[in-house]
Length: 371
Ligand SMILES: Cc1cc2nc3c(=O)[nH]c(=O)nc-3n(C[C@H](O)[C@H](O)[C@H](O)COP(=O)(O)O)c2cc1C
Image (cartoon, rainbow, N blue to C red; front, side, top):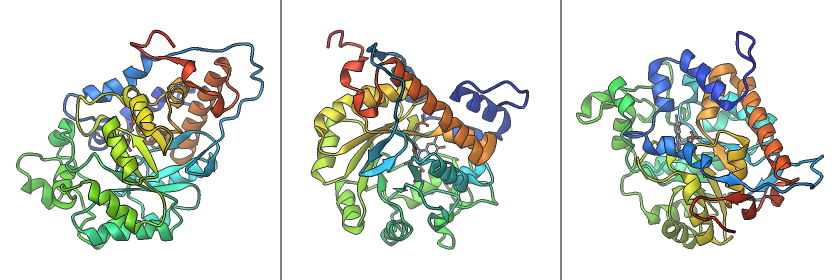
């Protein structure tokens, strides 16, 4: 509910609230995409071009959203994507998000750049998102700390050898507020964003872009995937695949899952919407590993479409930040309740009583007029 008593009716309402409530440094960091933000907008618009082919007269009095990801049971195929620095949205940051995920029995992916330590996240289904640092030992420690703390997978982000050019962050000289740190790197010299780096980067005044340039390994290549797999005793996914070619390489490299993602339009601008490349990736993978999607998922019907086109589950990025800002843990639960109920209704009205009932024949994709 809003302060005025008008009920929130869609995920967009959480975003509108955050627009009024967050300071510019945080708001712009959270909402921006790279460059002209073509991909950012396209992620959402592309869902509108996919249409649902409903089946009727199917007794939809009971609909179950439950499913499994990498063998772990979750209550719904709507999970939480890694987003950095959540304490800018709410003082409880990632702790609140994790508690909400646990209450909803879904999976949360913690960012390497969280403002809460890996070890401080409570139990629940949790994966760690990994950035590969130039400092290989620091990277190894992240993997080991996650394993020791009950995380069940590593999602290696492969689309960020450099940070995308986010114009608002450059204008704002984005920095992590001084009372916050990248908590996983306390006392390593890698915990601050937007101090020395911002002044030394003549061509990009975003503190985060400078941080990435100084800390993250731009040689990132397939040998790093093999290295992460050799260190990790838990499944490894790659996050940021957008083509059939790379999907095949990923499967051949032995990954346990693929997340089709364009980083919420924040890395390379003008790459396609994720929903538009999902099927290409799924065809190339041919069932050998589970395929996930993030980017622009805002409605239950979006989730339905992604599942119909082959995703095992989807991940939400920004909506979690808006909900966190609105009301911490309870806000994230409220947001997840809303989109889960939207998915339940979409499934019912399309004649599906379980996630397994959702098939390719339930959607009509542009350029493919016939089944
Ligand atoms: C503010 C913000 C911070 C993010 N931080 C990370 C990160 O640390 N690591 C990562 O792999 N992806 C990160 N992402 C990308 C998300 O994991 C996800 O791919 C994207 O947000 C999904 O799109 P959506 O925001 O439209 O749901 C971030 C996205 C946002 C909006």
